[in-house]
Amino acid sequence: MYDIIILGSGPAGLTAAIYAARANKKTLIIAGDTIGGQTAEIANLENFPGYTGSGMDWIQSTLAQATRFGAEIAYASATNIKWDDNYKYDVICDNGQTYTCSAVIMATGARPRKLEIDGARELMGHGVSYCATCDGFFYSGKRVLVIGGGNAALNDALYLADLADDVKIIYRKPSFTRAEAIIRDRVMANKKITPVFDTELKSIRKRDDTPDGELVATTTDGREIICDGVFVAIGHEANTDYLTEQISRDDMGRIAPSALPRGMFVAGDEHSGIKMQVATAVGTGCSAAIDAIAYINTKDK
Image (cartoon, rainbow, N blue to C red; front, top):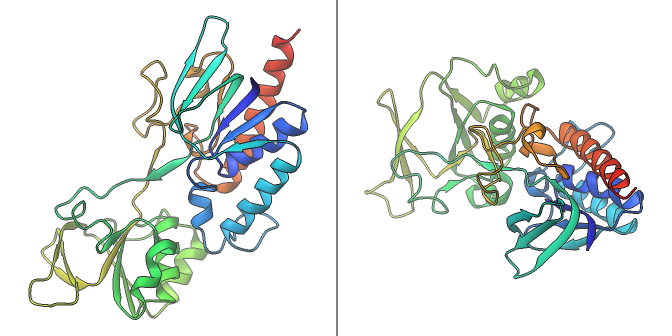
């Protein structure tokens, strides 16, 4: 039996693991198939204080710190959580194992929100992508569209501009007001990037008259844009599908701490009411771990 089980191996989960293990609590990280979550996909993590480098390098270093203090790791995903009247928790996982603990910290993060237009689902993995750092290489020297107007979309456009010959950003508003000023300035100064404001995509299809996989993206104002790939960055939804209806969630699948039973805590992008940033994930991971440690110490008395 573990003292604390942490679901997720992104910044929130790994920070919580460091604090829990340093407090001499028997700690297990349920990491998913791979560590790091969305942070591992960041090519250049430049808005976390005191660090410059890739997101994966930061994740690897933070994981090493957690395991050095004694945290264990299981590469699996939770499919359900059950608890009894004494608030002993069973975490059921897709590796066939059930892990028992006194406290659970949920830090499973969020996943990209899917583009719900004609052709988007059918072309996913065949021209439509939700990860620029994963798939950008395949579009070297080609033409791509980025869908969205926040920090994630603009950072994707900047990353792709180092690979592709032409990058267009399709955004439904007249300017990039949601993105940080420094990122907006970089985008507007990049000659490979062209913003297309005040419109959205209506559909995506394969171009019939070419053999090389080009796409036709149709906008809501009637334009047809020929491109080779479409990268989507239109927001996120929390990875909380493993929870039953006992745990109430908002329309993004996120959880308020007040909605949780005793011994259950939430951190990172799964936490309602916070900004989805590495810095806030680290902060809530720290806070959740300290609360979980105090809960166990009080419970044991």
